[in-house]
Image (tube, rainbow, N blue to C red; front, side):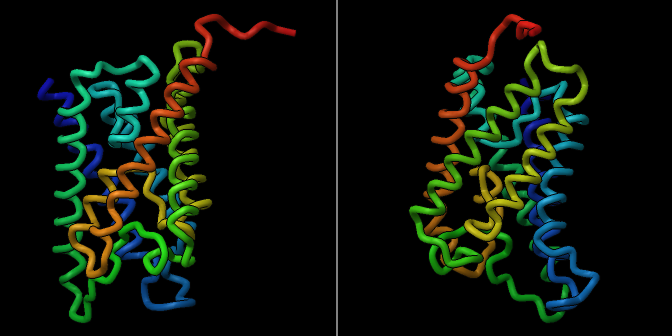
Length: 237
């Protein structure tokens, strides 16, 4: 178990460091309009790449959850044991917090550094597009549910072998392209927690949504795929 938990710690650490690091350090590098800044499209791709690379590197050890909502979803879908939920979630959150701390140490090395939102998630005034709490809740539930469906489908024993991390990484990229303007994209309570602790905003007071909505979405996705997925190959027409 210790190796599995270590893999979840490292994988979640990498997801937060790579994804949120791209947002904090590179999204707007040099100011608005600077061609060196990667923008929200680049940040979306960075999050997808962290999951893709992490899943290939560590998925065979722990399953490559790196996300409490995914762990809950896999449990609801009959792919994960209930007794392992709490240890996995603790490892994921600790990995995310460590990544947030490392990122803060790096970012604060710049003379004019201001933490600001620090890649945290939010609604209302903390939403990049000013979206309401209802809109934020809905997008997080729906997109997390779809993310879990993608994960369960891509890792099904009848799915093409070896390609699951690609599908999962591209799925997370697309999720970010859709929802960065709404919530700055969570779909992952650990990711939200890891940077909210260092943000110079009211991100912590809104953190509840980014635990409740993704976990609810994960449960929905897991239950939906458990019903949808078949152990038999689809018939050929």
